[in-house]
Image 1 (cartoon, helix red, strand yellow):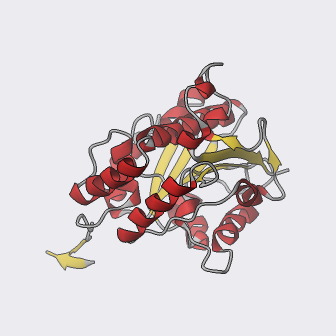
Image 2 (cartoon, one colour):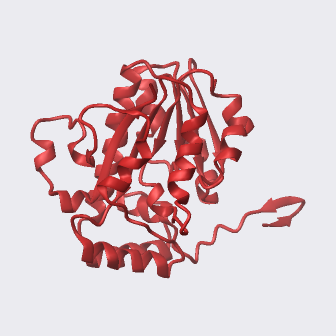
Image 3 (cartoon, rainbow, N blue to C red):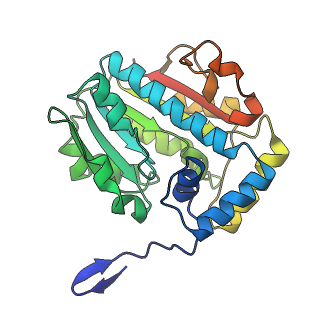
Length: 274
């Protein structure tokens, strides 16, 4: 970061592909650049359904958020928000409960540049944005944006959508330790909604995608169903438990059969702290 006219200038690193902007491209967004589109094209060349998989993740977030708001959750912490794509999490939550409060977090400075779209709360509710990294959970939980928006003494719906596969273990089980740190602070009645990429169904294609992201400077760690299940240790899985993302409470009876598990390539679940 440098300064210009006394103001900090953030290097958006537009010459390097970023996972949030690649995801934005797959969702049909416009906040992506040549490096992102080049990487996305490489992914599509080995996994033509990548855009479908991205939409499946996004639709799971919509369904899970709506279900939790209907169940009485009024506080949401969305880590790894990504570039705003309407409807965003707060639009879904506040569509059910106008007084819902939401804190968004991401580590891509370009998400901060577009955060105004995330701050259009209902008058009854509230939203906030925090630029932070999930690998430093203590900093997230103690940040003013979180403490002033959410009451951590009351249930919080934690959302980690398509995020933790970008956290390598480094031989120290780091991803699970990060999630356990977040879970430990949240009180009884809090929930964890999560999706995670897996190579269980299309290992060759997933391995090639991992190489593409690595070339862009981003590590991808696929996890098995058992490894994904460990993120929820000690919490009660809500029905239907751990599924592929498109199988988690689909809106219509035929929706879950429209794509294969290999296309979805992502586990999903929601759990509640007893």
